Amino acid sequence: MAAERPHVLIVGGGVGGALAHDLALRGFRVTLLERGELLSGASGRHHGLLHSGARYVLHDPEAAAECREENAVLRRIAPQAIEANGGLFVAVDDEDLRHREAFLDGCRAAGIPAEPLAPAQALALEPALTPTLRAAFQVPDATMDAWRLGMHFFATARANGADIRRFTEVVAFVMSGRTVAGVEALDHRTNRSSTIAADLVVNAAGPWAGRVAAMAGVEIPLQPAPGVMLSLQGRLTGRVVNRLQPAGAGDIVVPQRMLTLLGTTAWLSADPEPVVPPPDHAARLIALCSRMVPAAAALAPHAVWCAGRPLLVNGRERDPFKISRTFDCLDHAGRDGVEGLVTLIGGKATTMRAMAERTADLVCRKTGREVPCRTRDTVLRPHRGFWK
Image (cartoon, rainbow, N blue to C red; front, side, top):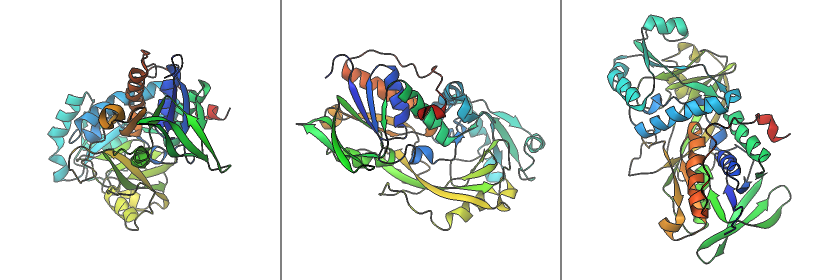
């Protein structure tokens, strides 16, 4: 292993951008390969909710605490990508009200501020809410630009020396016995193949991470879970609106500039490739979200899209909404007897920086370096800097 400046190769241009940023700050030589355009997978195709963590307090407290912490960090390091507009959790019927005390207890346990509002107060803040509102709670949700946030990380990583290669697909690992020594890569723009040596390879391919790991003969606990999202022409609310219930389908309304985004559906799939949104999912989202914001049923659809979540499987849970949104990084040396390969799976866009920090800590341990993380307080460069 190179003594001075180990070379780390990252597979995946989503959360891999945050990892490239972290590793470049720690002095590593970094190469990142993405088979398509940057952020063309799950990391750039979500609804843009910067989670306070409140969405997960009823069933996923670990993810709730992670989101609460990273919400504050991202506001500090990437303010240009964030609209700090706040969020509301609303109860529209008696079933929702049943979750009120558990929701407040969960927010307190996770350290998430949750301010109860009378229905009249909530309607004064957001007149588009249903007039039959039963209860509301104000939380520090925010709206992020899914694409710009990721590009802030890529721009800063490139400025600090990371080699970011788009449209370059890893087609095989270069093996030395049971050690990954590099990759065979295909540049789709030139149709030329090359061999890239590396001291360590990090598999951060999101829903495709299982396929990448399989090239080294290892299996990972990854479950692709596609979901449909919908945008409407016109902005109905100033704040994010969530339904007061355990996370489920059609329970998020996210304002994005002059659009309104509705999310989300979810199902489990063996195939990580993008799928065509099922024809009934858009109508289902509109029907469910209009129970919170009735005017959603009157706006014209702007776009419908799918994204595959890379869920970390722990147990036999088959409900995609109940599988935890936490993350893990796997060292395949101790786990599978394959040295030189680490896999990052799970997580959310809100926690991408934390995912990168934990993975970079593991990279440091594996390369015998003691370099602290600096990404919590390093303000990211403007996203346009990636091309400048």
